[in-house]
Amino acid sequence: MKRDFTKNWCMRMAQLEADTEIGAGALAIDPVFDGKSLPAETPEDAPVAFSRFVQLARRNRGLTVEKLAENADVEVAELVSIEENGQFKPEVRTVYQLANYFGIERTNLLQVAGLTKPRDGHLTDEAFRFAARSESVAALTAEERVALEAFVSVLNDKK
Image 1 (cartoon, helix red, strand yellow):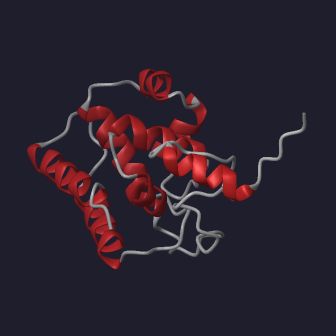
Image 2 (cartoon, rainbow, N blue to C red):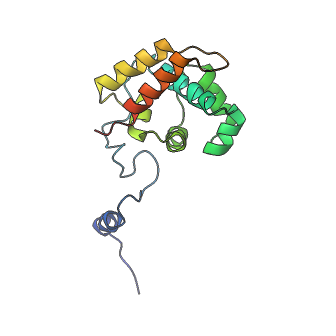
């Protein structure tokens, strides 16, 4: 017996399963990648906020780079590149894993990482404001903690 799984059948089954994601890669049927988001056309310095966010969120949880890599199931070398190079463009999978680990909206974190076109000017403005108010130091200052928490709330806004 031959089974014919059409695209419509697959989509209907996915809708029945609610939040289950299907597909593979950036071109899969995914609301984040609507076919208009790639390639990214973001300002050159957009990933700076992503770099600072990852570093501060990691430090806020008291994690080493190695422990974050283990917990989020990402490569240590890529995390080091993200934190040390504000212009580094991470892999999409890495941003997904970090968003899931930190409990952040993936679409917003992908935008902040410079991997999708800016959809929300407010988010872009807040990302630059966040990056400007944070510094690389050993422990979070009270001001950095407030900046981090404010940015996390903006990242978690669903549009």
